[in-house]
Length: 166
Length: 381
Image (cartoon, rainbow over all chains, first blue to last red):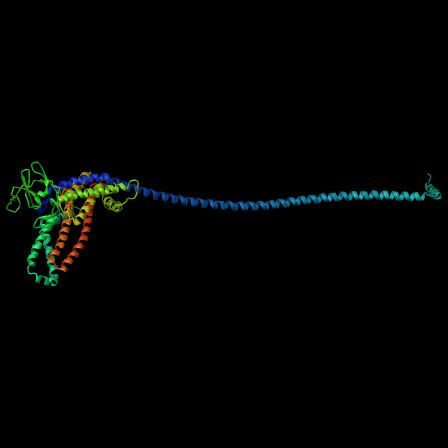
C-alpha cells in the first residue's frame, strides 16, 4: 500500500483526468452519438422492413384466399347456369312439342273439314250431272218416242185413256 | 453482493500490503530455479567451461530486475532502447518537464540526462530520484531519513511523461478512428473500413453489457462513457504489449482516475431508491438499518476501488511475468533454456492479448453493473 501511494503520480492523474474528460466530451459528440443513432436508425429500419414484409405476406395470403373464394363462386355460378340452361332447354322442347301437337291437331281437323266439304261438293256435283244426264236421256227418249206420228197418237190415246174423266 | 465485495477487498488488501515487486518475483524465481535444475543436465557442460558464469549470472539477474522495475514505472523521457548503458547512450527523445514550484517551470527532460545530471532552472536545482523529480542543491544531494526515504522537497509535477504522451496518442487515435467511423454512416446504413470491425464490438457493449445491466430505459446516457472507457483501456493495454512497451494502465494514478469516473457517475446519476438502499435499507429491522448504513456506504467506495486495483494489478502482474520470462533467456544462455523461455514468453504474450481485452471488458462490465444499481427502480426487485 505504501509503495502504491508513493508511486501515485499526481501529474499523471491530472493529465489522465483532463484527457479523459476531453475524450469523453469529444467522442460523445463526434463519434458515439452519430454511430449509435445510425445503428438505431438502421435497426428500426430493418424492423420496419420486416414488419412490412410480414404485412405483405399476410395481404398476399388474403388475396390468395379471396381469389380462391372468387373462383369457387364462379364455379358455383357456372354450375347453376348450366343447370338453368338445361332446365330451360327441356322446357322449350316440351313447349314446342305441345305446340306442335296442337297445331297438328288443328291442321288435321281443318283438313278433315275441307275433305268433308269437297266430298259434299263432289257429291252435289255428281248429283247435278246425273240429273242433267237423266234429263238429256229422258229428252232423247221422248224425242225418239214422238218421232213417229202413229206412236205419238198411240201414246196420246194411251194417256188419254189413262186419264179418267172424273 | 455487498459481502462478496468486502471479501474481495480483504483479499486485495492482503495482496498489496506486501511488497509487490519482491514478493511476486520470489515465487517466480523459485520456479526459475526448478526449471533450471531440470535443464541442468543439458547445460552442465556449458557451466563447466565458463567458471565466471555464476558471478555473471548474478549481475545479469540484478540488471534484469532493475530493467523490469524501470519498465513498469513512468519516465520523463521517451527511451525506446539503450545503446550503451555505461556511456549513458539511449535511443529516444526527451519530453517536456512541467513543474509547479513557486511558479511554473518548463524545461526539457534532456537536462536530467537520463537521471545522471542535475537540472538547473531559474536558480533552482532538480534531480531524478527513482523516477520522481526532487528538489536538490547544485550537487544533487539526496537526503534520507532513518527509514531510507528521501526527504527532499517534491515539487508538483505536471510533466508530459512517457505515459502522458501515450494517453494523448491513444486519445487522438480514438478520436480519429471513431470520428472517421461515424462519418461512414452518413447516407449509408452500413459502416465502411474500420467500422466494420468496430461496430460488432460497439453492438456487443450495447447489447450484452449496457442493456442487460442498466436496462432499456436508462442505458443510453451511459453508453458514451462505457464505450470510451472500454476502447481506451483496450487500446492502451494493447499498445502496452507492443514493442514500444509503454505501460499506462499499470499506473495507479490512471486506474484511480478511471475508477473515480465510475464512482462519480454512479453517485451523480443514482436515484432515490439507490440512496435509500444505502442509508436506510428497506425491509430490515431498525437496528440492522443502522448497522448496514456504514457498511453499504463503504461498499460504494470499495466497488470502484476494486475496479482500480483489479486493472492495475492484472496489467502489472502480466508485464512483470512476461518481462521476467524474457529475462530468463539471458540467464539461461543455453539454446534449450532460452528457446523454451522464448516459447513460454510467446504463449504468455497471447495470454496477455486476451487479458488486455478481458480487463477492458471487466472494467466496462462492472461499471455498467454499478450504473445499473444506481438507476434501479423499486419495482424492479
